[in-house]
Length: 181
Image 1 (cartoon, rainbow, N blue to C red):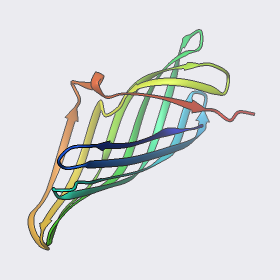
Image 2 (image 1 turned 180 degrees about the vertical axis):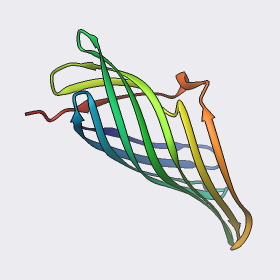
Image 3 (image 1 turned 60 degrees about the vertical axis):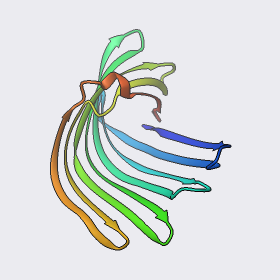
């Protein structure tokens, strides 16, 4: 199975600040069927965004991650499938804000498990469209550190448990390609 997500944006705003913002994200996934309707796989993620303002601080964010997942499908008939996916993940989030003459930084590392459901429709034997409710359930350990002008201003660890009651606001639309014999 091959799939994933890709995104990009580029915007410019003419005003007192002349804001320019661009971002890119990429998260390819690959999996292999280990049983009928059961896939194990790996997804990697990368994201980067940057702004530039004429009169304000500039900022830059970087995100990368790795997830091992298990996905199970249940046929609903006529090409429709219900699926559930669970995974073990590690993610890094870095944020830098530049202002004369200093720099502010935030770093967050988190590892945990996530579960979410979805529905897919097989357009062909090898190609499926899907809709999923990502981050429906998440349990993670987080380490956060912030520095301002090289001085640590915040350093904390924590455990987060989240059942996303507003899951409908985080609907993912995607596709999967199946390489079959």
